[in-house]
Image 1 (spheres, rainbow, N blue to C red):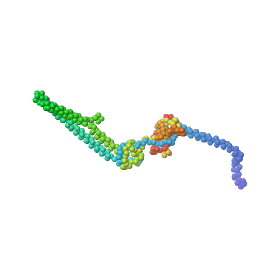
Image 2: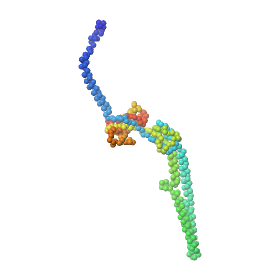
Image 3: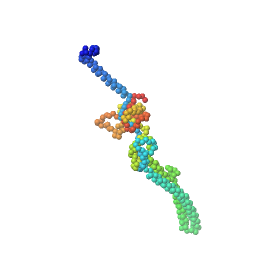
Image 4: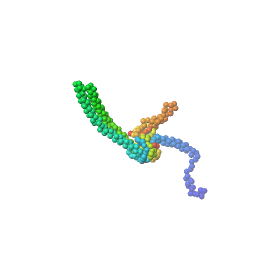
Length: 359
């Protein structure tokens, strides 16, 4: 065959001979020792790098978007006659949200106006009363003068023996009655003045007029409150409860307003993570809903108590089978800047606080 293919003879002559089984067996321990040494070193190096990456920061995925919410309710009752918003609408402070039937309160204003008019007429009548003008007092005093003069004449005649005892007593009784009529007229005048007087609470205004005016002011206030307006700028939620004709109960929430500019993150950190945490430290916020979105933030406050402490039914650990559980403390993270994506209350987030940075 070599004679048939002479061109391949030199190549075969220069090829490296394969190691013998004994030589291959001798080299295998070195390979095993190399692998056994490199793998632990690589694992140790990876663990050290991972530990270094965690040094100076703490993270938690028990964090959620929070927003201040205002429960909007009506201060007067009645059926809804107009609805101007729906879920997701953006509103400004003072925007009209819905309207309650105003007719009952307009009737109350008309009734109050009638009460004011009646009180004013009563005041005018009192001012024109004869008791207040003093006419009856003047007439009664004139009667006193006439009765007194007649009594003096009868007394003079009786002293001279020209009058009887009965005439004397009748003249004396007439004087007493005339003086009593003067006293009664003066009492009626004081009573009339008292009805026209004003107290220190509303000086210069008759109490009946003041009461009717207060009734009208209350009706006008109720009329204004039939228009329910947004207390602040924000986004409308739960507006599906507003239906035309629905009877509104005073002070019972009927929709929710998510206030603008109130977005923050409430991150629940383990109590073991709080040692180096302080207000003002930098934070990073990642969102499950928006994987590519990373926002910057700052630690705004650290809770005054654990979540379990403020729960409706706090845990009671004074039992025989008590198990220690790592508590979580709510930390408020303020978001810096404006998010390019819409932040919805309740979204899950992951928060990392850089505790190794100096403030």
